[in-house]
Image 1 (cartoon, rainbow, N blue to C red):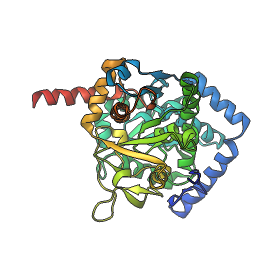
Image 2 (cartoon, rainbow, N blue to C red):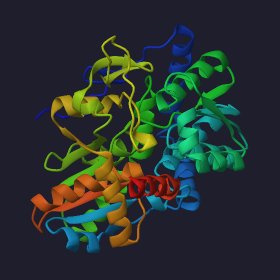
Image 3 (spheres, rainbow, N blue to C red):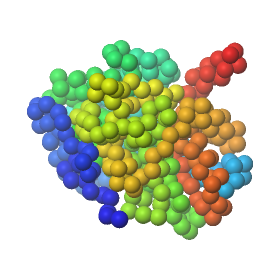
Image 4 (tube, one colour):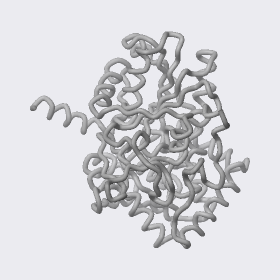
Length: 392
């Protein structure tokens, strides 16, 4: 099989690129130059590693889920504990990396989009740490179902802008953030949270999230003396999944499995199209517009996906599967009760599929599930869902 790492000027096979207005392309070119200039600079690396260690709390554990493994049978299940990061999710890895880049560029105003709110919280946290102005765009529906995260962002000094256009969800928040950048690119840095958007964003986000698989690869070799049978991660925009996969992409014997919500099966049913300034597999309606999506996990509620995931899917290197909202909810409850770990609803999709797959494998097999975030933000929502079910 050909080597999968084919990125060239922002393209992964036919996917990626930069489809933005000319003024914005100048900004993207400058951002790319600054990223390439700093990413391998020893001082930048040292500062980034300092904040990973002293602020985020890395390295985080690769925890053997012994109770869950015994309960399910089959393969051994390990959890990569991104839920233990400061702010409770993987998003802070990228937020700190990009804010250090913005600092070197002399920018003082930061904007971001958020769905579940974890990227918004991570961005607001980083802005508070570095004394920068922070504006977060969030779909109105998501501000309602993630009200606690909205309050967290405001506590941290961010201005949260509810977006009621369209469906009032993540896609619409991205639209508004890109609109802000077009208007204010001279003094604004768009801290994009997922592995999507025009080049160089997918490459930048992967670079900062690759710490996940850098650690897990070393940790699993220490614990098991071999690489995992599969690495499993939920996939919405795709930042936690690409970070979890990055250091295994060239290990052809390791299966890379992205888990989507059955209600938003972008990689399973999408077609190549341009969305938000880049080309990826996209769910389109009969008019050719991005299709309305809905998932119980706000962070997976997006009609597109990162370009590298689109390439991994079409090249056959990655496997992308779906689980239903009910299966994710069942996994949320199962992990909470067996391991004392309450996962985010996004991560629960990955747990749900790992449980299915483990049963088909043997005790010699090892699965790594990227536990992308903790479920504090979802507890109120799950409480309401379970209450409604009781009343049905």
